[in-house]
Image 1 (cartoon, helix red, strand yellow):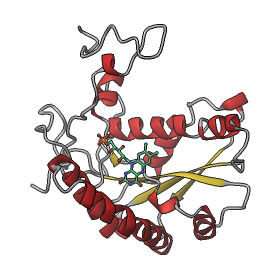
Image 2 (cartoon, helix red, strand yellow):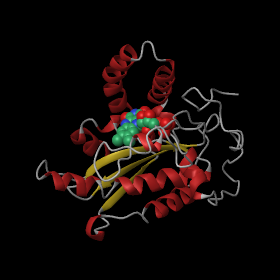
Image 3 (cartoon, rainbow, N blue to C red):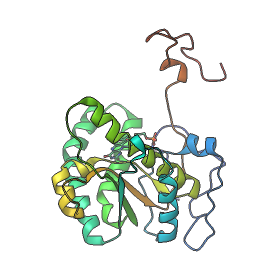
Length: 244
Ligand SMILES: Cc1cc2nc3c(=O)[nH]c(=O)nc-3n(C[C@H](O)[C@H](O)[C@H](O)COP(=O)(O)O)c2cc1C
């Protein structure tokens, strides 16, 4: 079998469907329980080049659109990229920034095996960007002014909930997906590649495809370590999960 998708140190979750179980032509169900989808959704970067049907992509995007937007503006735009030339152009942008960011990351993570595994997966994605079956670019029909701060919060906050819905729906379908932003390091170049008008802002890129390995578990900080009661820093649940 190919590399595990698990890019951290734990073994894969046994009950996850093995790679290859859900493939084009198979009936794709989105009936996974919500908590299971949320617990196992993660950045899946190694994808096969098996096709992903338009119908499935549209179904996922339909679910993405159930997310909230500020003032119910529904000011989102999604570009589904399938054209190899457009994918290659986005891939070049991704690679350009990855060379800088990845070089720095490798040096910083030189003693951290878990981080190195993630960087290997990011490298794989950068090397195979053109072969990814579908790349969704989530955009906002607005510019994002630098001031006041509330503008950025409200505007980015109107696209990221839909992106998370898309990631969860992809997880339920058995598709691999990740939220990435490196290809958007220059929104001017990204606009040019995608033919976006200046008042449409590209915010996130979501490569989609069938995973090469299994979904692995995510590693997250204990809930009690990031939750305060009444005042910031008052942490009665420190070191605890929800079960105590
Ligand atoms: C705002 C944002 C930007 C991200 N940009 C990238 C990116 O450019 N490339 C990439 O490979 N992953 C990117 N990621 C994915 C994170 O690295 C990933 O979510 C994190 O490592 C947790 O991974 P896990 O869910 O598999 O544990 C981004 C995530 C977020 C939320």
